[in-house]
Length: 256
Image (cartoon, rainbow, N blue to C red; front, side):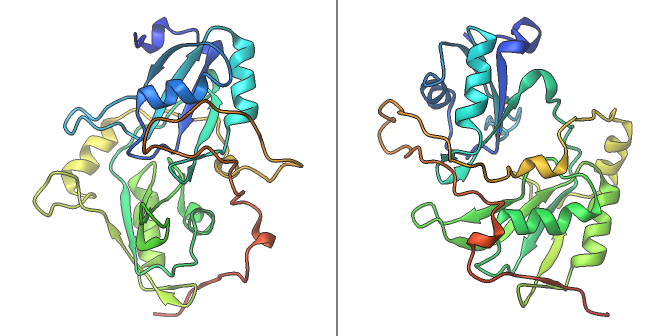
């Protein structure tokens, strides 16, 4: 049974972010059972589409199980994407106001770390940037999405970065299309009005914590058999280790 947030033992609950669209509550349950007895799993769903919103909560039987999950599960790959695991009691999700950007014409070498480092200069980013990738090869499709906490940040990013060069490619930065709408983009006057009326919920997660530093040794554990056609649980290839990559990319700001 999925318990409501007020009914959970927050000290024994972890927040799981950066989830792929294919992730399910049953899959999270099976994965986190490797850390200890799981009491409940909850993935908030979009009221319109019924799809999960890329994050969830896993409640364990005891606080020590949650602490162990933090140590062995943070930044492992799930469907080829690193997941973030934090204590739910200290993580409060900032509300999504619709300040969502589309970034196109990306060089194949651009990764989530580079996008975050570039676009976090304009304001708070709610989640690490989402680069759309081929599900079979993991190769970038050349575009990504960045979700800001407010429209001041997203407006500034568009003004500064649209048409600029990232890894020698002239990138497109604009508001993303809304899901299930006929060509309507985020950033409308109505959306901004609603955003102004929403209370700001702060998070104690610092920007640099979205990408973990490389530890002395990668986390290892022995998972149970994954569901058919699901995932291979592998330690994350640490995004933050820039020295391990061949070459590097720079942002080139040119005069307009």
